[in-house]
Length: 115
Image 1 (cartoon, rainbow, N blue to C red):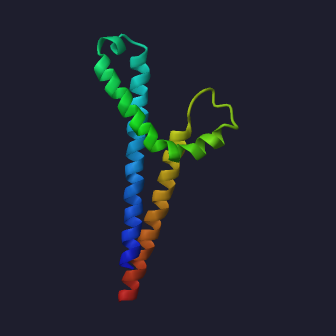
Image 2 (image 1 turned 90 degrees about the vertical axis):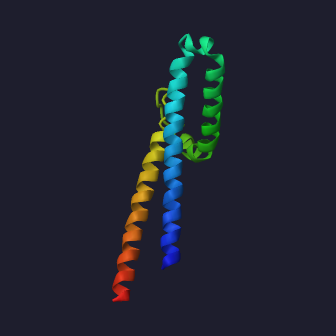
Image 3 (image 1 turned 180 degrees about the horizontal axis):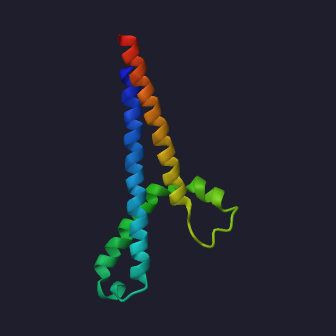
């Protein structure tokens, strides 16, 4: 019973880290998009280069998880908008809800068995 709770909590923790990684990558890519179209890129080259490197790191971390959603979305005309991060965040939310429902059942069943 304890192993199951530890396993579920570990999976939940991994999903939370992935969720925050996606949030940071999306916001960083938006910042870079707007900075690319301004004078900031030329005035602060070293800082802009650092932001590009961070964006590359976060993209490489999220790319394997986004790939199935991008493959699925290729069939639809999305007008050039990448909806895969949103779909991945939705999938993570659903998985976390399922995990918490399983955790509640495990806790309730262990409490009933202990009585």
